Amino acid sequence: MDLLNNSRILALDIGTVRIGAAISDPAGIIAQGIGVWNAENWLNDLDDCIKKFLPSVIVLGLPVRTDGKKSERAEKILLLREELQAKYSEINFVTYDERFTTVIAQRTLLEADTSRKKRKKNVDKLAAVLILQDYLEGLHNNEKF
Image 1 (cartoon, helix red, strand yellow):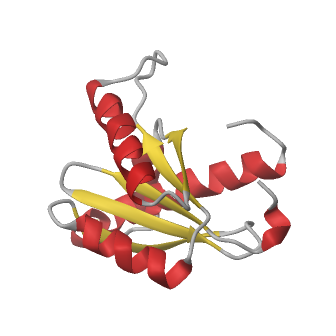
Image 2 (cartoon, rainbow, N blue to C red):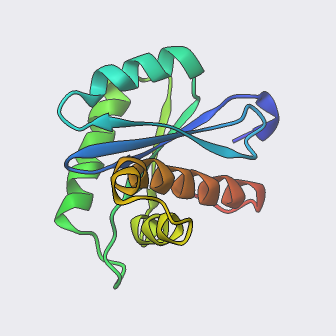
């Protein structure tokens, strides 16, 4: 991907209850959390987000086990990726290993002395930021995805 084309990248941390979302700046350097969506009706939020930010790539966090094998949830994410790719053919959907992002997000919020209520509300958004920032750094280091 050419990072100089000023297109944004969206990342999603897809859980069973909530979906965390993060967007890159146009230069593809910084990830910023933009929301937490309800897993029951999140596709409307995704539509709105796509219209607002016009991402060229959407990164879906892929829950891989610590031994590197795909979990049952990972298989569902891969199927979802295919469905989304068919619906939004102009956008490139990729998956990215999200191991430990939720744990790191929870720890970060705990260390920041965030209340339990705010942690629950923001952990998925922060996990999406971590996925996206790691992905962006990989792009800048010319890693292959």
